[in-house]
Image 1 (cartoon, rainbow, N blue to C red):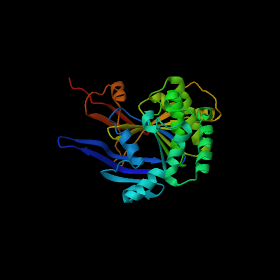
Image 2: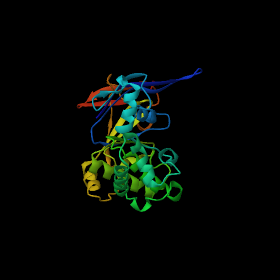
Image 3: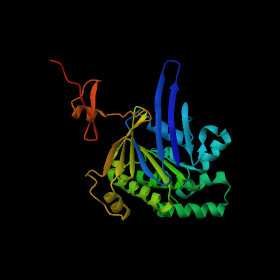
Image 4: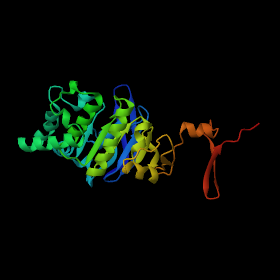
Amino acid sequence: MIVCDSLVKIYKTKEVEVLALQGLDLTVNRGELMAIIGKSGSGKSTLMNIVGGLEVPSAGRIIVDGQNLAEFTERQMVQYRKKQIGFVWQKSGRNLFPYLTSLENIEAPMLAIHKSAKKRREKAEELLALVGMEHKRGSYPAQMSGGEQQRVAIAVALANEPEILLADEPTGAVDTKTSSNIQDLFRKLNRELGLTIIIVTHDMKLAHKVDRVVMISDGKISTEKILKQHYRDMLDQLESPDMTDETHEEYSVLDKAHRVQLSDDMLAAAGIDTNKVKVRIEDGRVVIEAEEKKE
């Protein structure tokens, strides 16, 4: 569904250049439910904006559903954002108009695709029911809790039936229980609608219920975590497994030059505190160890 090929993004001002993405490679399959994790400044939001057509890369390619976004005209890019992408932001002020009811907020994006008033209303009612908010159809954002606002925001993002849903810190402003409910909603939408969902966050707890977690560090993919089949089956059966256990298998990711990033935790655990390491093959494994200190 999405192929990021050696993406580079440079932000320039008169005083400084910031390299947000440094040759990032990523493939997202159709219908995946995944999270992109990274510290502030790692490049995760930049990646989401490029996938969503809000920014263009400085170098590299991004292919979405077989289309090279770099070749789009401005008109084509507007249509892409309007019809293929749904956005859910952390702050409800970016998701909802404060002077419209829940139902009217969901109808608003449909004005851009010329649906009749009757069809807009029918679709909005359907989406409210899908996110479990039909009882708030006449409520304004200020009359709803943070979690309720986010559920309505998800319905707004689905109004034009996008193929990809992008969520930027969707649970950053809600409590733990509400966060868990929103995670369950994303999984439900992924399974029932076949939506490709990418959640950008710095919160590893949010990533427990997704199938794949991609860690970005210094503008590149460093590791991936894949949900173990046992937990996947339990979540799909709407069970609540103990998510304090190790739910995902973690893998380091080699880039095109066969380089791998080692986290600070890994280096500390191995006692490596220099930029030189010994690398050897032992019983079919690659072993990396600290440089021998001379007496």
